[in-house]
Every structure is written in structure tokens, then in C-alpha cells.
Image (cartoon, rainbow, N blue to C red; front, side):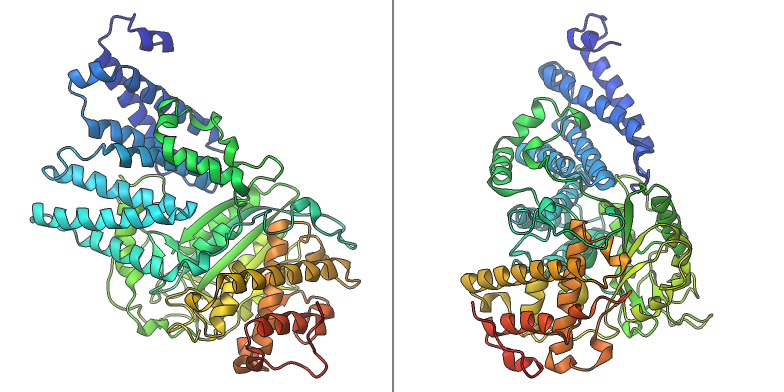
Length: 612
């Protein structure tokens, strides 16, 4: 049936029959793509365009024939279901491509569902309808978190709480325990991911940082690699997370994207929040409709990212192999692994993630799968209690990306990554066992690997109870929010720091890192492994923040001269980047002086403040 026939009804088929035929067609296509992986570069792009086209057609048809369809029995929640599917499709395409425009479109459709209250009628009489509303709110929460729409996040959390309370009163025979756990997760997540940690964008902002065209020339760069793909994998018992997105992965994900720039972005978002539903009505025209208002055409595309939470080792290896295979010739892959090591003492604490993995996949399933409707396909059973000590096989010098007690089944060893060094890799390991991965350097199969390795022991933050809870990993925090991490390390909280003081510190740190980057680019003995990545905006920033982190932890009194508290990198950086060099010491001294805490650091003789 042609588009014109659909619009005019000239085929003679009743409007409601045309509509339900379109619904059946759309549902069929949606079910086929629901569980397709996000990490394959272009394999499913054509099919996604076809699915978007069908849902665009369906959405327009119900708009243009709304009155007839309502008279024929169409319910408002059924309209909401279509809008929700389109929101899921846009979110899935964002996860596959990392293009911000798709995330924005997903927000527009979800906001339309919220403001028009599509699921409201009959909500308190039909448990199925109540479940749809709960799932919708959880999905919308995920999108809002990624867009940093915190006011909307808090509004959605309140609605989720009120709806759950009402559901427990109304549907007493139904068990809503899993939704209580969902709310507990998001509350803990928001307590950890504070406003202070987000006082500046974690994404790369050309308003606040160097434009890619302004990066200093690298003297010894024989080639220039670009960050094209990233694989982010995280698992810690009891870690802060929402759905399948850990706090550490959440921060790292943002640090590998461009911040939509300036007032142009602010104006566009204000417009979409006020008239977004109108924009949706005017077409929802699928992936061909790109939000130019939040896409800066002068910037490269965001690197694609695959996000894994508690994968099986075989699944991890399959994803890593696929991403390496599809890496463009000028590309480099960032591999970020945040996991407990063989010396971790986390075995003795209850594993909340062991309890929550089932409902995360069933209810939200926002980061491995496009859908929330299919049955759980968790690699692990839903279990509560403790991670069992591993008594089967040696697990020394490895990372546990799943619960213990499975021998080596959930362990990643340095040797596991060596086959993938046939392609350029930039590896970040955040674990007690990170230093074991130094063995990769010199054992590569083709391309020398760049390694950033966390300290074996993380300093507890004075302002919080531990270095992982509730604020996430200190090492990852330094890589993604260095000034906030520096402030927290000193024992301050966000409320202790005045806005003007923070602004001065931010400008000082940014200026210092820029000078550090220029010195690094001009260094005579810069290793080619580092030279080839300094022209990439994201990797350059990670490396400079690593140098700052290393300098801070090396000079900080409680960790001074204690190797277990020091991060390392392989291959070695030039001596001018050493924590004991006057360049790095001066940066730390200037920042410490600004906050009046120079007495908390141990500086070499002769290191003095420079005149302005």
C-alpha cells in the first residue's frame, strides 16, 4: 500500500484496519532489532533506517486520523506505546553511534509521553498499564541522566516513587519488590553523582577547552591516530550504578563525547523542552532528521562506545574482537576496564549487584539492549548474598568482571588482551591489580600499547567514607573531573568552595594543562606511542589529566613516596612530566596555594610560586 493510499484511504480499506496493519508491521520489525548488539559499526544501519521509516509512517498516520481511530476504539496508552517505541529506537541508535542528536530526539518523544500523560487513563485499574508507566519512567530517567537534565531526573524519581506507592496500595497481590530496588539504585546514584561533580561539563567543551584545531603540533608524530571506538567495561560488588550503567562508566562515557556548545545549544534545548512535542508531531522523521541545533559541524563525530556491565569473559572477548576488526585504518581503540582485582577485599561485603542484575535487565535494560520488554537473558542467575571466595584455579594478577566463585571464568588476564594488540590500543585499567598489566608492554603482537594504570591502593577521601563509595573510583574521577577530585581529596565538600574560587581554580588548572600539553608535544624524547595520540582531543586530555593525577598523589603527604598509591603509565613519559619535575610540582603548588592547603603536600626545595 502506497503512502498516498494510506493518507487518503483511497484503497477502500477502513482507517482502523490500515492502522492496525501498520502497528503489526512495526511491531514485527521492532521485535527483530530488539536484541541486536550495539557494538557492531554499520552492520544493522540499513535495517534501523527501515524500522524508523515504518514508525514514522505509523506516527504520522495516527496523528492525521486520530479522531477516526479514537472512535474505532484506539486508547491513549496505545499512542503512548508508539511514542515509547520511537524513543527506544532513538536511544538505541544513540548507543550504537554516540550521536547526540539521537539522544535529543529520544528525550523529545519521552517528554511528549510525560506531558500528555498517555498512560494516565486507567493507570490505577490496570496493573499492566501501571507497569508500562513504570518502565517508561525508568527509560526516561536513563536518557535524562545522559543529557544531564537533572531537574527532570528529580521530577521523574518523585513520580516513580509516588506511582510505586500507589501501585503497592492498589495492586496488593502484585510483587513490586524489584521496583523498590530500582528506586534505591537511582537514589544512591544521584547521591554519589552530586551537583559539585557536575559543576562543569564532563564532556569536552570547546567553550572551556582547546578547540581541536588549536592543539599544539607534535614534533615526533610519525602518524596521527584518532579515537574511533571505546569499550567501557565495569564491575565491582556494591558499586554505585543505575540499571547497567556504573558511575565510573557513566563518567568515562561523558568524557569521550563533545559537549553541545554555547548558547546555541542552551537556546535549542529550551526550545525543545517547550515545544518538543510539537516537533515530534511534525514528523519524527527518523534518522534522516538530524538536530543541527546541537551538532557542531566543525567538530569530528563522537567516538563510538560499547558499554559492558558484568559481561561473561567470552562476551567481552567477542565484543573486543569485533570492535578491533571494524576499527578504521587511522583509528585507535580505548579500552577502559574498572574491576576488582585478586587482592580486593570486596568479597566480604554483600553483593547488591548480584541481587539486582536480573531486574536491571528486565526493567531498564538501557545499556545492553534496546528493549525493556523481552525476558531477561542474564549471563548469571539472580542470586543474593556474598561473592564466594575462589578456590578453583589461580586468579592472581587478573581482573574480576563478574562474581567470584567461578574459577577463572570471570577473570581477565593481561595475556587475554595481547591478541588484540595487532591494532592500536589505549588501555586504562582501574583496579587493585592494574600493575599486572605492565606485562603487556613489550609483549604486543603488532602495535605497541599505551597503558594508564591506577594505583594498587586508593586513598580514602576525607570528605566521604571510602574511595569507591559513594563517589566512585578516585582514579577515574581524576581522569574525568580532575579539579573536583583534587578538592575532595583535600577534605573539602562542594558546599565549602565558593563559585568564584572554583572558577579561578578551573582557569588555573586548564591553563596549566594546556602548557603541560605544549611541553609534552615539543619534548625531544617523547615515545611514538604517546606522540601518535596527542593530536586526538580526548586521548590527549586523558593523558594530561593522568599526569596531573600522578603529580598530586605523588606530592600529597599521606601518599608521598608510597608506590602503592601512585598510578603508572607504559611506556614512560619524558622526564619533564615526572611528578618530581619542577613543572608538575609548580602546577600542584599553585592549586594548593589557591585553596590554602600547601601544608598538605611535600614539595622539593626551590619550588616556589610563580609571579602572575
